[in-house]
Image 1 (cartoon, helix red, strand yellow):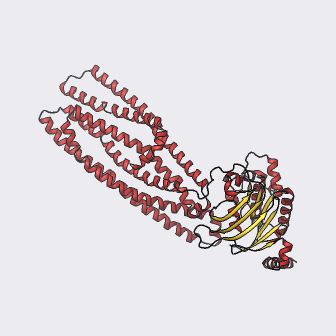
Image 2: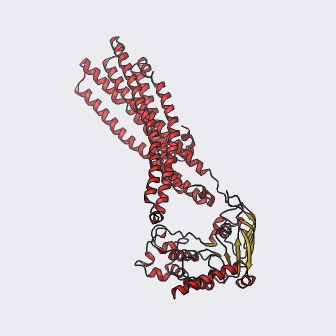
Length: 584
C-alpha cells in the first residue's frame, strides 16, 4: 500500500473528486444491503402466510428506488475516480516529458530510447490503474465488506458471522505473500518489456541498414529472443496472478460451508428463522466481491508500486547542467573567448580537450579542422553548454556562458549538427521549427540563403511536402540545407555548422558560404569540416589533433607554415584533381 501514500500529492490535488467518488461508493454499499434483507422479510412473510399484494408492491418499489439510486451513484464514482486516474496519467507523462527536456546529453548516453518510452507508456498505465481501479477496490471492498459484516452481525446472528470469518486471516496472509512475489516479478517483466521496446525502436530506425546488409534473419532472431524473454517473465507474473482467485475462492467456499453447517444448527435450535438464513446466505454472496477485490487490490497495487518506483527513480535523476542563481535573462551577443585547460566526457578515461584557446571578435568566422575524434565536436558541445564539467572558462559577450540562462544562451546559437534530424511534417514547418508563427516569405528567404529553395519548388507539394520520419524522403544534401535554413531563420548571434556541408557538391558549398558571408556580416560563425574548401575563407583556422590545438592561423599563414594543414590541403587538391581527371 506504500504506493498509495507516495501518490498522496495527487490525491490531495483531486481530493474533492476522490471524496465525492468514495462517498458514492459508500452509498452504493449501503443500498446493496437492502435487497437481501427485503428478500428475507418476504420469505418469512411467505412462510407465515402473511404476505399480501400491498406489502409486496411496497417492497418492490423500495427495491426499484434502491436500484435507480445505485445506478446514479455508480455513474458518479466512475466519473470521479476513473476520471481522476486519467488526469494522473496525463500529469505523470507531462512530468516525464518535462524531465526529458531538462536532461543533459549524458542522460541519453546512459539510457535507451525504448526504455524511456516504456516508462511513459506501460509504467504510467500501471500507476493509472492504481489510482483508479486500486482506489475503487480498496474503498469498495472495505465499505461493502464492512457494512455487510456489520449487518450480518447486528441484524441476523453475530455468532454465525464470526464463524463465517474464521478463514479470513489465512486469506490475508496468503494474498500478502503473493503480492510481494508479484511486485518483484512485475518489475523484471517491465524491464524486459523496456529492452524489447528499445530493440523495436532501434530496428525500425535502422531498417535501411538492416536490409542493405541482409541482416533481416539475424534481426528477427534477436527480436524473437527478447520477445521470448518478455513472455517468460510475464508468464511468471501471470502464474502468481493466477493464485489469487483460486485461493480467495477456496477460502470463501470453506467459509460458505461452515456457515451453512452452523446456520442449519441455529435454525434447528430456534435461534434463526429460514428467512434469516436466506438473507445471511445472500449477504455472504455479497462478500464474494470484497474478498475477490482484496486479491485484485494486492495485484493492482503491487504492479503500480513496481512501475511508480521505476518512474520515481527516473525523475530523481538530476540534470547535469543547470542555471545558476541570478542567471542572465538575455541573449548573449559580442566577442567569444574560449579558454579550456581540460575537459573529459563523463565515463571517458582520457581528456577530450586540453589547452584549447581561441578568441573570436564579433562578426568573425572560425574554421576548425582535424581528423575524427580530434576534439572538434567537443568544442561545440561546450559552446552549446551540453556539458559543464570542464576546467577553464568560455565567455560570450563579456560573461561566462554559465552565467546565462540555458534558454537564452541556446536561443542565440544556431546549431546545425552532423546528424540532421527532420520531423515528420512539412518542409515549411521543419524550417520554421524555432518560430512556428514566422511568415512564408521569411521561410523562403532562409531557404534561398541555404540554396534549397529551388529543390523545394521542384517537389509536387513544394513547401507543403511532408518529408517523412527523420526526413527519410530527402537526400543527405537536401536534409543538410533544410537544417541550415532552420538555423538561419533564428537569426542567431552565433551560427555553428558542424560538418554540415559534407553532403553537398563543391559548387553548392561555395554558393552557400558566399550567401552566409553576405547575409551574416557582423555576426559570428564557427564551421567544422573535413573539407578545407569550407573553411579556408575563415578569419581564423585551428587544426585539432588529439584534443589539442596543433596549428592555428589564417589559411595563408597555415599554408606558409607547411605543417599538417598544408598536408591536408595538398592531399585534398590531389584528390580533386584525380576526380576531375577521371571525369575527363
